Image (cartoon, rainbow, N blue to C red):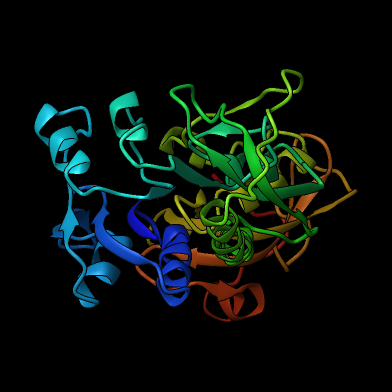
Length: 308
């Protein structure tokens, strides 16, 4: 089919790659405008933008798909369908209705649970045991369209947002290729979403990234894993040269007690409001991620240390 692909992060690259490998003609890719990245804060294209550009596919990065000029340009592509994966903008009806067969979204949750911007992170933070990825026909309502296909995944005890992103991206890529085949052959079945169990996955803000050790340990563990690798839950580690910011990238809950924020042994077991969390992977400011035993070789943290 003749397609446009709208997506921005790494999660979406897998689907774009799969669509191309399946033989579809992607005539244009849309992505969010280049943004400041890295220490130098230089403008860099999104992962989808860079992938498409490397393969010679035209890329557009409009600030708003509601711009009449962008709507006209999109309609002029004469598309069979559009594929949308974590694009980052709400699309108007004029865009959704322009392709002959409609616009289809790969969404990282089991709708209607976790509609919105951060379904993968919120599922971990809420303690969900099961999640998935679905292909949905897009409508004007936020993630409210009928579902064409579903893949279900268990959330592991040591799952992070990063590891779940990888698994869901792979599943979503397979699912969109299967769905496009069904759509092109006229055999796709659309199932309306239930009106029960609707939840919204609010965008992740940096304010929740600082660790609050007074939270109960299970909540804290899920937040650490749900914010890993980015933006990363962080705390302050006291050193002889002052406090150093450290990200906690992986943790596990343990049923022991103590004063919140105080280490209970010399292997990074930290008391929470109720219970404790064992920090398993960390990243000191200015350095790369390290497993706890490697981290401790360069920065001993004895029992009784008060973390900030």
